[in-house]
Image (cartoon, rainbow, N blue to C red; front, side):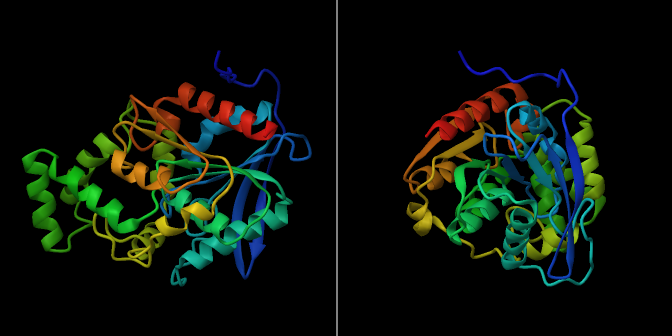
Length: 303
């Protein structure tokens, strides 16, 4: 029998919110549950950059068993939104380390989704200690391979959407409302396939950080022009020796080929594919997602 995850907390769960100050920057965090209690807490790194913590709301249901730590990365949500910052992978890697150090997160399970999974890989490969397990959710190890797969998905969109994207990309009109409507066709297929409107995604959209995304990634998922454009850690995945769960949706931007690039290189990985989901299975198939996480976390705790 798979583990059951409470639909809601039968009693109030301790919560704490605040700010971590580091290198002149300020990062907002939220802790649900008791950090002093065992087992090891779950630290979750959201995507984007700039996508906010909001779509991780279902993860808080795990706090009956372990503390869950969320934060808004610099450039979005309730964290510092400074314009003109020098955006880099190093900046976000320093932020993870600062959050762990100041909140006393010596031993953690580390979850990262999409860009957050890339950041989780960066954190582990930097030599970070105390990682009990790693959850790579809808993520990647090679930006150029990812972009090629997104171009393949893009070309399978309806002809009118592809024509609109082609025309407006040629003009550099990425902020044109017509472009955003055409791009939404891709997002409806491969980012979130659930009921609309979804409060968590509406809040994320309202508080997202465009500047960070454009600087790190580029104008869209298939045109990597930012500082991550040559990012590739596939050759280093064998250095990771902690239990790893690769979890994604069947219709995910993290395609079969992208996921294979992760699982083939990791020494101790398993894969879970949620058949009705795309890039946000935590919202699309919440029960199955949480059950898969809880089972994996408990097994990693015992190991």
